[in-house]
Image (cartoon, rainbow, N blue to C red):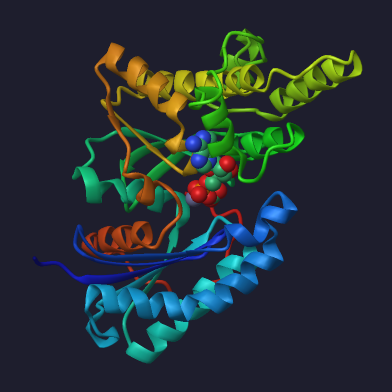
Length: 348
Ligand code: KG4
Ligand code: ZN
């Protein structure tokens, strides 16, 4: 196997990730998550995340080097997430990356987190035909991207104007009295379990944000989930006021249907508009069973190839930053100077 050996560092939210790749071969992908520490707060607390990164970064790096069986001195370049993300969390990864770059004398690349979610798919599925469309959905971001080159040319064509899709899941779970993170819980309740029947996704018609005719003119590829969250809250409140039971599975399935219907419809519409043959999905919400089913159906109808990295690569990790670093090195793009800082709103 050839190609430069790249170390990737990710710390934009609640996962401390260190990945090591040689070209497109994954050698290590170690992740330490602080998700458990955020459970009692019902969402990621930035200060708690920063502290957890500080504690986890060196042990995670050591585990990754041991797993890959490489010495720090053998690393050819270091890539780190410069943004977007939580500022205090990003700072920890960037400081570590700078220290490593100074100590080893190797070039350092500050890269974009969203581009990393796109690049990681190269590990599982090889080269991406261009232009491609990427739908990135997590607790922190919800974006539709046009990808012309993974390393140098990605354009955001749409994003959420309020809550991220995962954030909507988390907030709705909370108002239903379900634990954080809400996505997997709502997904499971909607699908049904051995003891509980599945919910009916058509039971309640919740609003599909930014799909009205006038919104499709100004916001064709944008998303909005805060109105949906309010609609669920209202619905539940009225039922409770009238002393009625809350049909949890039906509410979960109907809410989920509203989210996944809009995400999949707009993603497929973007492929049509750009003439893209490939749709790539990433982020924690890409694990959602209903979203996948809808996307599989709607892409198949149009002959679009749906690409989804395996679950461990869909959520935040260091491998995605390492692969992106490999692509950047491959294009001979200049390294970052050592004085770059974290950028919480870094555009792709
Ligand atoms: O990518 P990720 O692990 O971290 C960031 O937010 O950056 O995504 C976590 C988000 C949470 O909001 C969680 O509720 C959501 O992804 N999520 C899901 C599912 N699994 C995780 N949402 C819907 N369905 C799922 N199966
Ligand atoms: Zn992410």
